[in-house]
Length: 446
Image (cartoon, rainbow, N blue to C red):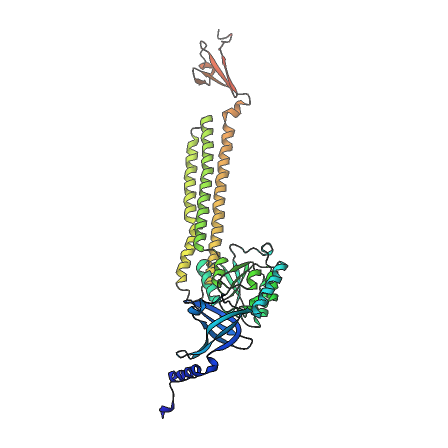
């Protein structure tokens, strides 16, 4: 009973035999438009299509080397070859023995015409494009919610800079209704006005698959967007009208995510460098203050003031240690360490919201610690100024300007009249100089 059933291999061998023995399929001439061209091992693989149908084609390397031109997507060609069956896969294709260029396809010609038109109108001018922020906090993504492109974007953002919030604006990214869907999502993102930048993304595909991004109305909507736009459409070699009119073009959806985010490790390094620079300048300021103090002490003989400075040096050391322990960098590093632990459990539950909360907490702690540190330094400077004012008040030179003088004899300060020796000269010191004099006894003393 089972003898009447053919195996799959037997059926495919029979079909291959039919194709091979049909004279009409041995040497056919066909015209069509190339689509989805790829090169592997020197062989050319593509689809040949017209308005209603398509068929696979292959140009083996030996034939490809003899071609007088390089085939490309959208090109209309004249082909001579034979139709063959691939028995293992059960598919058929055209084995090309000769190919000539007939011209560019209508889809590609429309693309070139629209590109030229919009370029003349200035929609591609760099000086008219919005600047993409270096560190956006909120990112809108316009793409299909089921596409791999969305997962690539989210994964890249979580690895590089998980502190941002991502808003999805779902849209069609292929087909006749896609342009209208993309425009609606773009306008909705502009109305919400919560995102700092908008990513418009789609994974790879043929030229026809990406044609929805070559829509004139969509291009004008992107140009009119009040929020900067970044496109990540197709592969690196794919260019659409949307790419030309957007603020920035990335080669892939992943590349778009990289373009709008900073690497958290580089950011931590930058914070560390800024902290070290701040510490260096503060140290220079304090050194200058200390040198000013030394100058005052040496000039006015306030030797006991060293003890005051000693106390403030200890206070500086305490503040420096407090800065090191409670600095924004330490808090950021602690937050990053926590993020690393949470990343290991990211597949078990949704962590994006919690990471955003932790990021906000880290930023809040950093702000409060910076404010506390600045307040401590400000208080120290006020106290330093207070002591400096007291020094100026107690400065003997300031008192001598009011008419007081000092009398020295034999290099010693004379504080009593009885200590004057009448047989030797003494010196009267004013605030601006000295004057030698001889003592003279009163009539009573004589």
